[in-house]
Image (tube, rainbow, N blue to C red):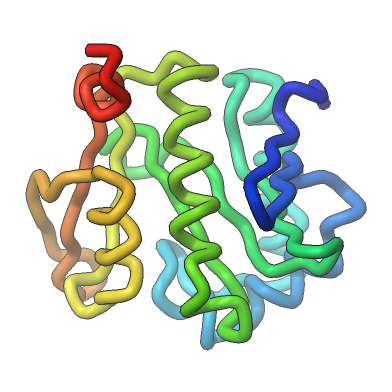
Length: 176
């Protein structure tokens, strides 16, 4: 993995997911408090193994992917960029342990991943999808400058789609 893919914020270190993260990934992806609202829902151990392999390959193939989030060396969650299987585009995703929520860490990680996607990975458009009822995630997405751009029904749930374009991103930074 490239060292330039490791990112630091005021409180977090974001490192591309790798084999040493497997125990943490298995735990968070099996927890319904965290993953019940994620695309695909709660994961089995085998599914988590498979996703980790795909995530590692994605970094090499695309130059973007999922990061493990650590605060003071403790695993608090994941965030990153992933091509959605439904063809809607490259999506910003994040999931944090409930104990790490409510302190702005999701916003910090999501903003960092979004900035990386536009500035380093060269993505012209990044989307994000949240359940209409998931106000916490929707607040994070709006708070980092993503705008609502549509909705759809997924597995019986009303979903809201957000987007960020590179032009909007540069404009927000005063470089547009």
